[in-house]
Image 1 (cartoon, rainbow, N blue to C red):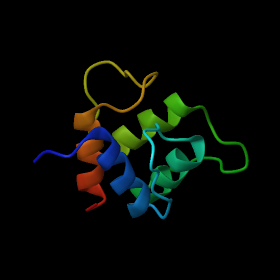
Image 2 (image 1 turned 180 degrees about the horizontal axis):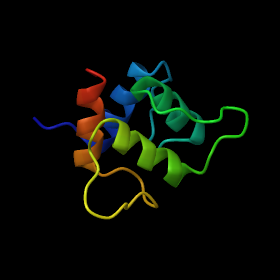
Image 3 (image 1 turned 90 degrees about the vertical axis):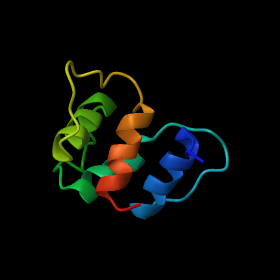
Length: 89
């Protein structure tokens, strides 16, 4: 059975050393910062960049960028699957 978006997010959180959430929730800035670190996308940790910038960097780092940036929205299921695969989550 295919994993839900929430299950994928939690797998990614756990793979990056973050905690699993029991409720449906998109990634926080801290979750995205941990994910940036895990995929090798360097950010300024003193002052975290905006979420869209971190999402774009994550997708670029794993080679999952598609036409248009689309990073002003949460990750889509296909993007989450690509991220989880890149982390072996």
